[in-house]
Amino acid sequence: MRRSIAVLSTDTATLHGLKAVLSEFGISQVTCHLCQEAMELLTTGGCSALIVDFDLPGAQEVVKMGALLQPPQRPVLLAVASRAWPGTGQAFQSGADRILYKPLDPAQVKEALEASQALLAKNRRKAPRHEMKTVVYFELDTGTLPAIGIDISEYGFAVQATEPVPTSSGPAIRDGPDSSSRAWRRPRENF
Image 1 (cartoon, rainbow, N blue to C red):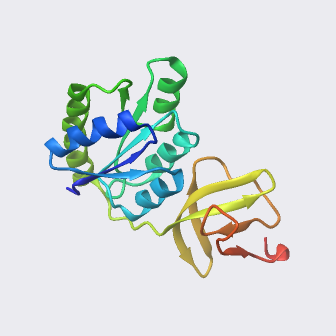
Image 2: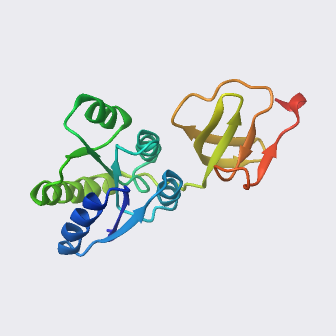
């Protein structure tokens, strides 16, 4: 098992509480302050679990991206949320395996980690071999939509996105979320 867990949070109390519990298990914590960092870790398979704070904008999208991955690459997805409906409901709807409630209780985190180790072992046994390629971003008229590039061939490419990709006559695809990243646009007549 990979011995690191990615944590997407900017809350100091959450980060310190998780670090103390993770160190007891001999697991290192990789802190992500941006959704982009967490998505990159998801596609590289660098962590066995991803803990996402649902108080951050874009948290639901990160968990949805993780839920799209097939079992050898799919980490256990843990959401940190308040006990109120919006946070809890969004976490489960987006595909989180388990919810850790604020304020974090060390016993709750330990129980979730023990359960996640059993879930990882079960998922790994059933996992087909599947290679992830990269995170790509569709530049649409309505905004930017992240997706995971699954397969690229001479016939085109296959992606999985958290939302349906609308039909368009010429979307641009970028390898990063900002304007400094490379963009590819196919001529309109070929769409």
